[in-house]
Image 1: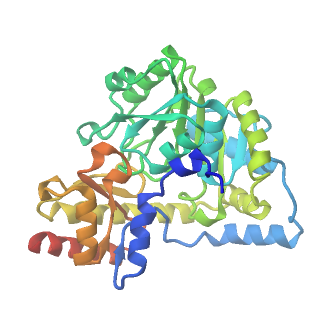
Image 2: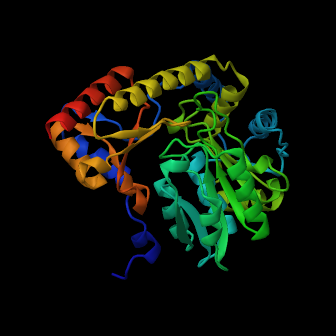
Image 3: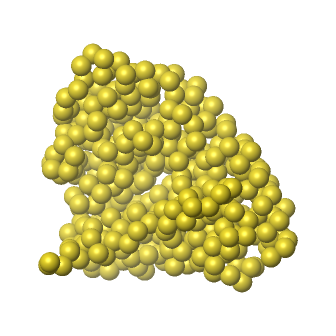
Length: 386
């Protein structure tokens, strides 16, 4: 048979799933791997989707999503960021934030274009760039400045082939948030070099210590060149519903809608009505989940402060802890595999997120406090007896 496509062969599996799958065959494992809320979707959202099915919402919706949902997204975005997006031409509802990211890249990137990413960054960014035939270029960031882009290093990475960059704030895997001065510097660089910016804001509702997550799209003259990506998955515990969205200028969103027609046609109709209820219904469940994550985050940060040899970067947002293991003299993968074998605790090695992250492991604390306490106890015992 003829060879499979180079694109398919060049996209490597996610190391996050690799670690998750390793643990499936083991008993009594504490897992801090997948970034998925452990809460059920709030009942009013489920009821709204069920009601939609009951009244006959069984058919295709517009490729861009039902207009009621796009209007609600527009209202919420204007209230939170002071930015108005026309529901008819500047908003698309997608199959999760992941499809929004891919459609955005397919819209702005040609084969051979370069996309600038932070190192570390979420694994799927580089894989999706490769699917587009683009070239991911990495700019190292460090805990010293909260895992933000250093503007000087960022600008030094730009070449004549650079087309776009991704800002992820709050960040997966670090929990870092881009400060206003850094975002202003990035915006200035993007405008001077005529770059698109993809702003991944799927964790913007999960913040700690009175932090704010600013959108680079809200800065002067940036809305036109910025594609904002968001999702219902993390905010409303709707990962399996697969509803996300993108905001941008009409030319970008219009082309994303054309691509959507040829990829998925539209998002599941009932799920869209559930998402509408998420935005327009009671927000108390969201606030309760936010409180729970804050409590879990406090447990994680306090717990690692008492484990010699490990240093935890205190996340400002999202639900990930990025832990420095360099004192162990082990690589991230060696540490993760040894911890799994000896302590039955599974974490994600930092090299899943970039080359400079080989001294880190990531833990998702989107799990119960009991699980976190047990996991921390096992990690401490491992470090004291290894």
